[in-house]
Image 1: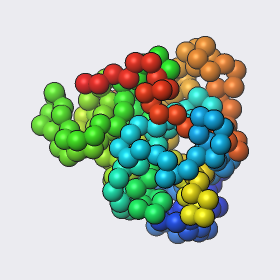
Image 2 (image 1 turned 135 degrees about the vertical axis):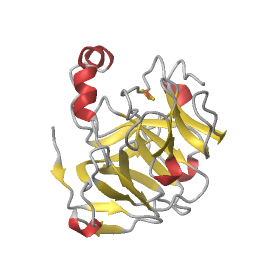
Image 3 (image 1 turned 30 degrees about the vertical axis):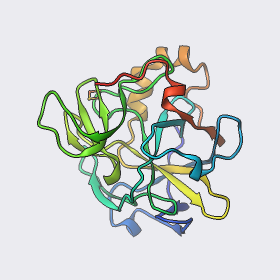
Length: 238
Ligand code: FES
């Protein structure tokens, strides 16, 4: 698996601020990891315009591997930088949202508990607009990503930190850049607790059927964004 130390371009907020980063520059133990850059495309294969995204709506693309899904969200409000920690106690600073309102965020859609993820047939995990409900614990917060499998809830406005449920770490952040001139988006890497090795191990057979032999191939240059309701035939609500 390609996991280079991140020393590259990464967006830190509104517009397309580009910085050279190292783990030390972040003052953190969990450094960002660079993957091949991939421009986000719409379903027609054209560069996706960030302004075309509907606020508080689930979108899915695949990155950094052909079989690893990512949620793209326009939260409709600014998402600020947040200090977070992986389950093995590595700290990192999630840089917040990008775009003119700093409202655009992306996270791996693989649940940090037991690796539930959205497929074309079924999705137990998605963003829910409005007040959170959780049948197992008192609800906290609103506008959360909820996994119906065991009711882990993540706050996408705070780097997908865990607010409820058994997940032991935030969803892994996917780093995206917004180009203010063209209003386009590019995925550049990840930050936080990656679970890709566990994911490929757990679902090896399933992914070979769903995605084929390229499941573990890194996405390069381009990746298509779809609304979850168009990508998945049965998005479960709970
Ligand atoms: S797999 Fe998501 S909460 Fe258990």
